[in-house]
Length: 317
Image (cartoon, rainbow, N blue to C red; front, side):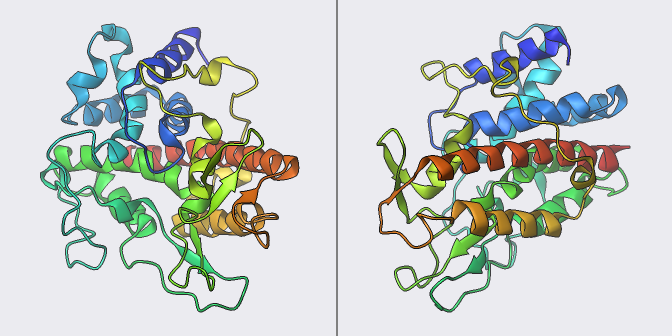
């Protein structure tokens, strides 16, 4: 990876704006995945992706003050958080009346669509450890939309470029979401008969004594939000936080259904391991749990980056 590109990553993760909690991996995780994916693209594919990213309504804000030679890289990485930003940071978007059961919930009409589509970020493949009945996932979810938007992004889709830009920006985010284990499952129990909303209803206590929701704990494994007033995240510059090389066989897997199956299994085996599986709430996380969680998150992020790069290449080649 070039020193120039590393500098771009550092810059994006340091000063990108965002003050509202995001939905997965938080800002820093999503941008790190995007940074690695961008680095894997060929110059030709990058140029096509860059042209589409430029059509996002936030592009000028993303690159304000950035040297011309770095704008494309910066914008691609920054675009990774757009699907979360429209939940409250960007005016003009709403979730009022926006439900996964609506007839047009999975529509692909580009930036004309001003729904924030919170249900596009996950697919709750349910499980239970106490025999509680498991409910089906929403009919429109992260899996259905990765498929729909991938088809739309394709150079052969016939869709106008502004719609394909919308598809690309969403996909940069959703492929990351697909690899966050708690975006692939919900636990059904006597305490939560309609599911625990991907861990958003479970409270944990970390090794530092902080109390938070289980979902937030996993979101924050790469750090918090990259804001001018928040902690500086050095991402790929730091050997201790640089993502590991992904397994080449797993990286080649392009079926998003299998991505969600993998993530759901990791959620059951790792995110809901003891003491979360059978302990008393708030679950006090031990060293073994936290070590396994971080290792799992890093491997998943590396896979997400490799698979995202391949998805974009396949669509734009």
